[in-house]
Image (cartoon, rainbow, N blue to C red; front, side, top):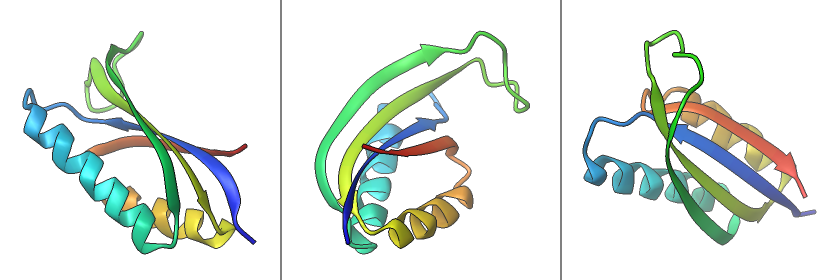
Length: 95
């Protein structure tokens, strides 16, 4: 049974907007390939961190997705995106 989810991703910035476009496209393809139906993609933009993280990153690019998917699809997407160095953080919640 499909459920509604919200996913927030923080992407590393390399100073190039093309990188962000490519990463948003890769996340979209990853979700769709696991059976998710995308409802909305919000680019929240570049945000400064209060404290630098372990990679000495001082900022990141936030993207929010709303979609409908099977619970098992979340696990698959999460495990694939953990391998991507450009995704600093990913968080999902059921709506």
